[in-house]
Length: 154
Length: 406
Image (cartoon, rainbow over all chains, first blue to last red; front, side):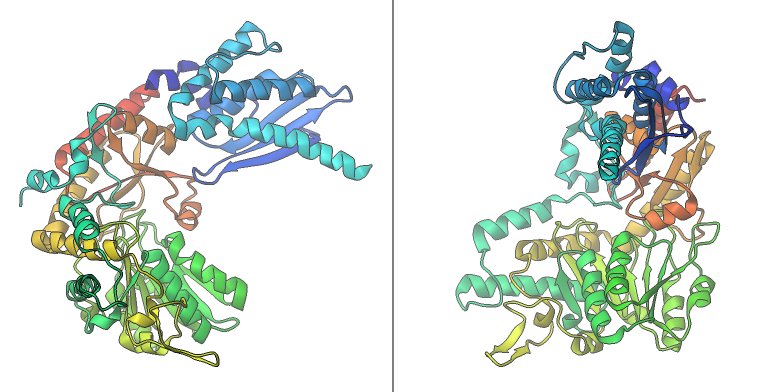
């Protein structure tokens, strides 16, 4: 196991100064996620435009460096993506955290991939995987919940 | 008393953790086990096993005697008046649930109040919460002061004519505060209110004398006393055990069972339904002997020395905040580091073989009050040394280095 792989500079930096930590104005989708055993929690806010694109995404919450960095990096790179792309990227990310060595994603450029790969160090720390994945699961929940509301309105 | 020799009695310390010696600072969570306890479990299963209290064959009689011997050892260890005041449970949690369930059934009605404290572990809150849901009782919380203590005054403030039982921890598993339980019991009794003490953290570290304390109920966890998991003790005054209804129904706790009615067994059988954790109870006797051989006064003295040393060292370490400053404190130090989340601290320490706990330690009420989602906690046992504390401090410095803190 290697602590340096887990706590890379980029993680520490995002953990200390998380991006997009606010409540998006006029958000139209949101979800809360928490990790009751750790006490970590995140609340994801999304503003999806009429073309089903992420116009804005933000989060509020508290947690360890991994939780905060993961939410920060995730919100950064989801901006401007279409809903189906978001879901695809979440799947690629979770695959990487759970099993694969590399991040295989057709939807991300090399820069974005490199950033996300920084989180792959948690694989060696099974108890910390849930910290890295919390915001990602919450993002999917935000997208899905909102669909339910749309259905109710129909 | 040579701690290095005592430590050798614990086989776990022969193993490496991430290629480092194990520095175990999580005894408030659960203590490690000396070899005599482990051997006793193996020997009992391999040479002496039988169920207890039922059959008349040789093994059953021998096993029953061994099982009952532990009851007498516990009675003596905590100076209870009668061996039948010792009820075996699966842990302190079950002991408290037993009281909440049976006392609640008989004596608590709508709007009655149960007084607990902000320091309580979830196991001394949730069982009472069940009664809040089922019987509409109220739960009051005595408040901590700025040192993380519960004073007699804090209890007095919350007592009124509706208070039916007071349930307090002996020693906080977060701030380490030792409560003035004798004074609280005297006060409660002067108003006719019974007292339950959660002794999870008290029993492994402090001298106990039930007759002197005069408490009504005292809950003990075996696995925090160098004993096996799956074993706890409820001490309860005989008058309560005779008065309260049974807890669980099943074999062993009955006298006579007919289609039209059932009568219950005498103490202590009334509260020990089904096959109990026999091997664990028998091995727990060895834990008590282990603690008696060292002497609880020596355990207290040793842990106090470690605590003073650790507080001194950690207070000098920049950006470490120790949670609570109780005058009377047991071997528990909860802390935070500005700029590093407790889980990150715990992961980094683990790489050095240093085992601590991070989180809310099953005390969310207290953490909410402190405005902290989580803390890191180092807690001591008889096997810990000053070198362990030095190791902890070095690892904490390593955390700060990784997080670029000074």
